[in-house]
Length: 190
Image 1 (cartoon, helix red, strand yellow):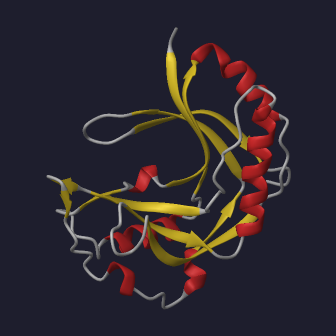
Image 2 (tube, one colour):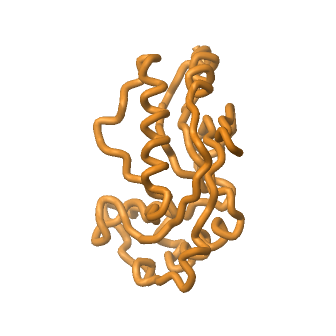
């Protein structure tokens, strides 16, 4: 049995927005965080985990039944999980387009439930991961380099269109994950 580590995501389609998101990372020292690479920026709608490769036709058939309209999304607030005082994950949240994104995530989750893929117990928190903290020994380096103090001169620049979602596989390596697009579902009006 060949297992694939799978997830479903939307991608940031605006190159200008992607570049601005990457510029936010500059306030985080490389010694303390692992930054998400430009070509890997995405927003996960549903993490499937290790899945038998033989289930791909079922998965893509279920995903193909999902219909949605394209929408615009804007990023606004910087934050961290579990919190700003002890961050493990540095992120930016969605302001405009949040309702549409939540609706799409719910459609994906519902569409896959018929295949026995359970819905998430915890709520969907729309965010885009910019970096992950590096742990050194048992502690965490706490130099955030002013990340949370950044302001947006023109918030409209942090806007992107969402015209598709993608089923991706992920291979974890010491250098970072390697993603492969397995299936793409386009919006009705894209």
